[in-house]
Length: 91
Length: 372
Image (cartoon, rainbow over all chains, first blue to last red):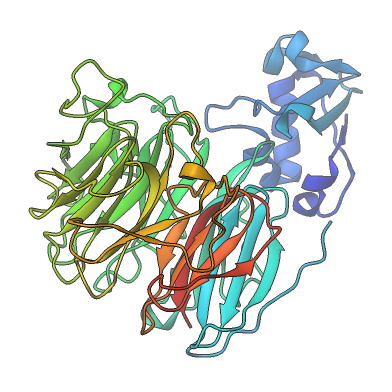
């Protein structure tokens, strides 16, 4: 599984633009749990206290916006590419 | 990203902390306040609604409440005049599980009393109060206010449902007052366990009952340190004074072009002197007649005088927000305010004369001062 990290968050991920981690497949929430272990400081920047993706962040799973595929329940394959991007709605 | 400039304050300098819609700035001048250096922008692109200086126990700590539309809000601190800021791994002000709430914005940071040097308070949106007892390392929700039965009936104002003012009673350690738009002023006399509204005489123009127990859109409240019974309140329509610690309020909109406005500041040594910046109306929200005028009372609101020397009086459609006006503790007292058009004005003579300290900033939200 490959995560692509947006520029604004790279300082909090050890300056990494990509984080690759093993994943056996599951939901987006489970996939993100793997990311938080790799880069703990990203968690509260991406999720609110209600464990929801912040409204002005888009998460794309293999090119599809997770909001259109069940949000945090969206299925993620073991070799998925997950892209975190700030939404244009955030100004 | 913009080049960041830093200031180099010396003991005795006056600092002006400026929070804007797109970052924070620090201004410094020596005690005569005639020449100002500008540092920043810090947190470029992020809204900084709250700033505070904590100088207790020898600290030189500056706090900023920083919010990214994308990445959320956190408190950051610096101990070296903004050359380095903390960047917490986890969000430091966050609603606990079970509240079904998520932080939208940090609106106010208030260091505790000198007798409680590791206590700080934080007001947020959705309206709630947080407290830290370890100098800002960890924060907890003040449950007594969050669980108040009237809270579900508080409504957001134009800027959101926010707890924007925190007043620690100078004489009564267990008494704290907070102001909420749109909920009114609330007071605790037992350190935050229980709270009650304190809005008698303050009107709510937008409600059928114009003088309800709560629900007013209070924009700013100030309390005298020398005479704590004396308070002033700037309301969403209404200008008030209290002489009983906010239990009752008297209309003092005497001679002002409008009693709508946001900010208010009180003289640190004289409970009869206060400053406001009236706005034409809640629709227009700009200074009346295109004139940027600060109004000052020297007699506890019996009269208000327009202060204009050095302020534009033609086509100046400016707005000063609720935390955009403040004073320092130098002698004579300095007065400072920031506008939504990105200007910082200052006065070193209690408002008799003004000049521009900085221009071209992003829209200014918060202005605070400190003495190094």
